[in-house]
Length: 163
Image 1: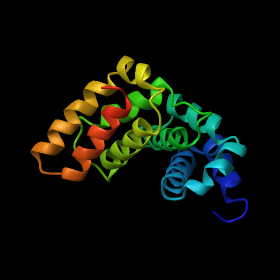
Image 2: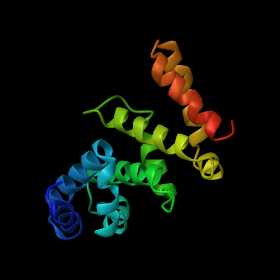
Image 3: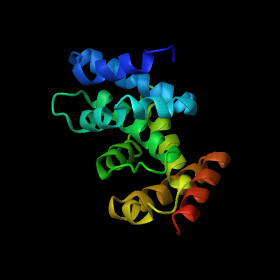
Image 4: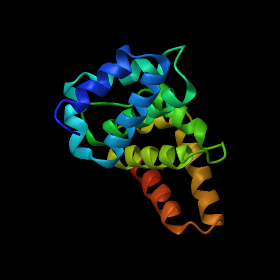
């Protein structure tokens, strides 16, 4: 992101209108997913607290909450000091049972798999929120559909979680 861009997006996600928050959360999500080098800047700009509050903000749209959760899960997968909270995991896991809509299901899957393979330390949390069962179901579904690479990634994630 251009100099100051991260700070502007974090400020909009925190203080903007409902629409601005949604757009800023989406932009942060896309930036974090595409450019892991931006993770430190988002953390330093206070983005973790802002994104976390968006996932629980009653007035935030579902897309805003989902974008914030995906961003947080990607951050947690690359920053060992951060942990994805149960709300984030639950939001993303809920997308696995829904049809694809504007790539949100795929993005949720990619973020979840990145997190699951990044550390086995979160295995208890994954069991608690139903994530292990969801990954097992996803592995079966993708294997049946012939999506080999995704099935392999699910299996890798399950192994990382000690299953």
